[in-house]
Image 1 (cartoon, rainbow, N blue to C red):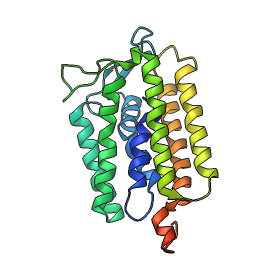
Image 2: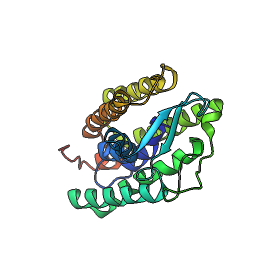
Image 3: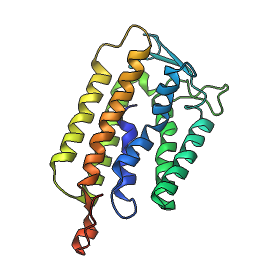
Image 4: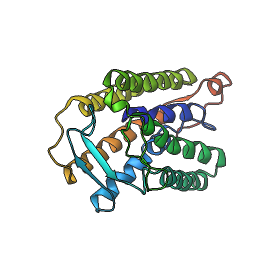
Length: 226
């Protein structure tokens, strides 16, 4: 799952205190993947290319205890919750961002073949929808599209930035699904993933700076987007 991880981010941003914090929630949605690809760069977690790993994704994610165990994900989520709460001085916003980060493991459990763990040790878990593309692909699009619509209905602002974000997400997802995969895992693959996360988060920040909550607008209390 790629853009599907941003579905909880859209929902959380739409119910955030004061104003949409879309960039913060985008970081939360992919937080453990930020962590995984960074740790893979330094050799702390590992993956390899295996065309037989699943029907959709040729990634054998055989060693990722710090990011994709349920315990590891919970630790990342708790840490991010604390950082956001202290940074923004808003516990509710911190809790929301932590829940978005925690949702990553649950969404991965739906699609991953068994490579997730509870605490970094067997058993390995995963419902395996990556072996059922006709289910996994529509599911990801429906989750993301529905959350995007919810965000748009809850907020107001110019249409340009959200449309750019939606188009960019679809472009990256198309590449993720259909572009040739590298023959081996390595620095190029890891940096490519981090680049995609960074670009989408940057566009999400632009969107968030140009959206406000519908009820705030009706009351004439639009807050400056700083």
